[in-house]
Length: 381
Figure 1 (spheres, rainbow, N blue to C red):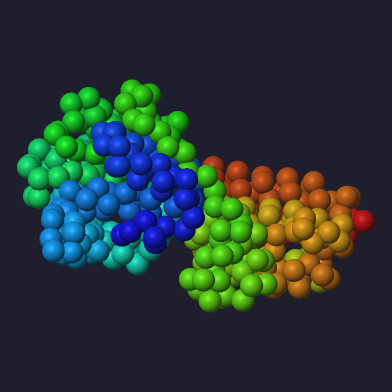
Figure 2: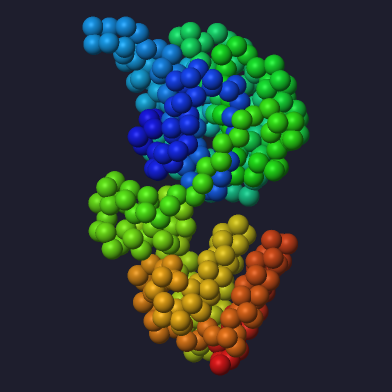
């Protein structure tokens, strides 16, 4: 992967390249920032750049990178490039086996080569996970230590990219700390974190922290036009809805995306509640109850966002709204039902349901009670 493939983040790119030019690459880096900002893409591009630079040799055309190394890096299969990431234990693994990244290397490379802008949900799906919790095990730290103790295949850097190190268990974190305290020669650790406060303070203190900010709307808009061929007006609208996240922008383009499903569930709930169709609402509740708890919580987050957008729509100030065309079309007729008399109660209702779901409440009971209360709240003027 190359820096040209990373969306925006020109300041971080330049900072990384300057480290290489000045020969002051730290042995451990911590890339922090919100989901969708491109941290993993930056880490992967920088890792590939470090390894490629170490293979540059004089030729008739000047300094050139070893073509074999470039081919391996393009597939993320270079022997000096190592990835660690959260994994799950599958039913096929033995009782004594602790899962490591190599158990899922094929799925990881396939997903990352397709796009370095991946979410935990995408990764869990790629591993065919159900309700397991993905972690980085102590066995993974042992395996990483073994790999990094080997000599570099081409005499340059060995790079370890650790995605979501906050998901390390205590034993794994302690072993990684030892690696950071006594790093193997010419080894660079690049940790990619969304919750750095969950890392051991002793680990954070041994890294050079780089903050990666949300992508500006204009950067996302330009990328949508140039890379995806989206019309300017649509790209502008999507870039505002994306809230600084490139995956969110791509998600808005996908008619089969999760947000499209959530939009359909939101509009159906509001229409059935307004019409007081209890039988149909019961079916709606059954459908939502089958989604799984994590998705149900994301659904409630989407509902909260739509409450805000519909309330703001009443002010008739387009710059205050962040909606897709479909959402705006619905708000045109529906927004008047979200007003000063009920907006706080509706928001608190959705927040309460999200909390109850997180505490393992019965989904059918929670969502049916929510639907009944929406019937009442929509009539408040």
